[in-house]
Image (cartoon, rainbow, N blue to C red; front, side, top):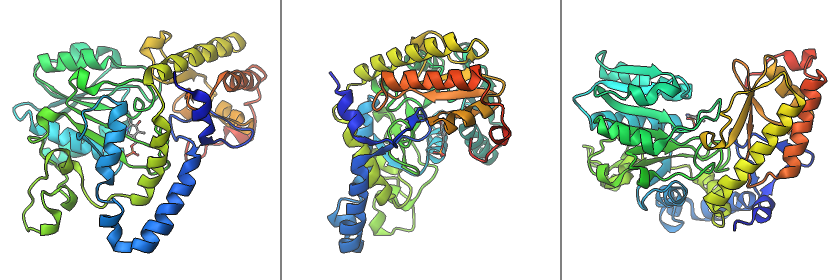
Length: 397
Ligand SMILES: *Cc1c(COP(=O)(O)O)cnc(C)c1O
């Protein structure tokens, strides 16, 4: 059994704050403060350039990749970290299209995160007008996987509603239709069990600053299935993905396997924070996490719905169809979230009317869930949201 008291004790949670936004930015693992200080002070400070050899900096992206890989069912040696998720989406999509050269259609859904769609648009601009980004409603993805689709580019858990795609089923359908799959695990990694290998996923990407708690700017990850490892062509052919970076050859030659998905210099200080965050996961069973997440989510939904009949559940009601977040629709959602933040309950807002709450059992329990539901009852039931200071929009929502 996972000891959730121990995982909770591993995080710094500000006094008086109930944090339901771990789906946007995970909280600080206490050990990260010292680990980052140590890397800065002892490794950077004392080793300087030799740190690349003496402190394991060059291997850090693969080492972190394997630690994340364990949580997402990846084979060892097939995940690497670096860059940001948008970059990794571009790399995975470009490599996947290249593996299916006779087709021109990228299939995605209207629930996908805009940056993924924007990256696809940018890639299409480069590849030529015969390429098409085809968007369908999330519920229609299965039937839209026709035999002209080159690549399905899907985010497993919808960032707005928490709706969960069936990765194994859609991957099987894609393969039957001759398509290659790119799965975005931004809201899956560290949120629920993922089995990339079992689902026979082709490519996967995700970020480490949401449910994995690696900190703002923590590097993204990319997975390439072993069967594609030597065939996948890196579109962003930077020197650290080269077969021999320090030969300084004038011509690019992709490195072995997943190493070719590296681009440039890895963010060593940020990786130090991620390393401390990954230590927390060592004792966590993803099945336990999922069970606890569902129990807490059901409790939250029941309490909010009982107190606030005017707001509507935007997430699927069936917990098996949800990721690790619960969303509600409320016309004045933006102001309501501001009023909640003023009460110490941190959720977030996604246009046009979605109030999002991340349910993260690593550091949340029944008492926080109940207190958050009570705060929502005050803000919405008693109309606390309706004040000028809550109605004015800030840049980051
Ligand atoms: C959070 C998120 C991103 C963000 O990408 P960055 O490059 O890390 O800013 C992209 N795609 C999805 C699906 C996300 O949820």
